[in-house]
Image 1 (tube, rainbow, N blue to C red):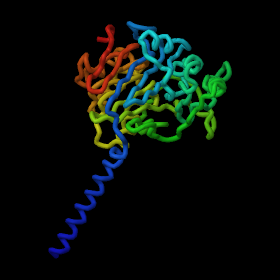
Image 2 (cartoon, helix red, strand yellow):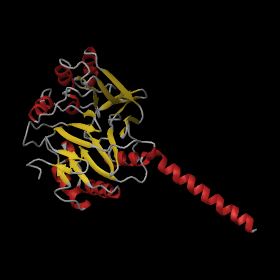
Image 3 (cartoon, helix red, strand yellow):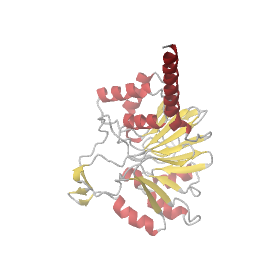
Length: 324
């Protein structure tokens, strides 16, 4: 009986060890970024450069440089980058978080401008499955990315379409389409999309975000968060178990949300151990302040995103004058 009991105890210990290894294996399989800087190049608030209803941010991590979204108007990101003295000519990779024009409007301008000096500049765009689906409207095709695709590929650029998560470089994890266990419904359009299964409500199925794994925790860069910021963080947690979320930078589409929705979102964000929040673009100014209060953050750790604002690993947020 004693031998049997000892054997059972050993088996339990072995199972627990395997489970622990399995829970940490996903995080351990990813690299980590040791140096990270995120610079906002398009959003509404601006004391330097041009503000607009749009989003773009340059991510610089361990020598890798990648542009997340390209703003709304064709010239905004180009002009802001020049004013901020941010060189985009040696950036090869672009991430488009979804199809909306306030995130894709600058792509062709940036590609055409910088390929003059560097043919590889902005020559590869990472998108998620669904971004090229037709969005029929009363005035015709509502998805500008269908036409943009042809024009962009004519410059020699290529689209890389992802139907699942992928690591772009060590420590940089692109979510691809995000599962949605929570009914956040973080979109304000009422259109339809033509999928392989037929015409359905356009939930922006291709919405994706960039997750950067650092020694201090995860840093999430999101364009609009149409998949839901909590759905996105939950998805990241499964890939990086027991890893706190250090920062969220970008839009989380809470400007039309009720106070109850914002409070629910804030309370869920707090569960992830969030330390820094830069709520840009469609987050909503009031929503940023409400989230700051409910998370117990300060004016130094939770701000409205502004053109030129940066988040630097090990330093925190440099918000610019208006967002202080």
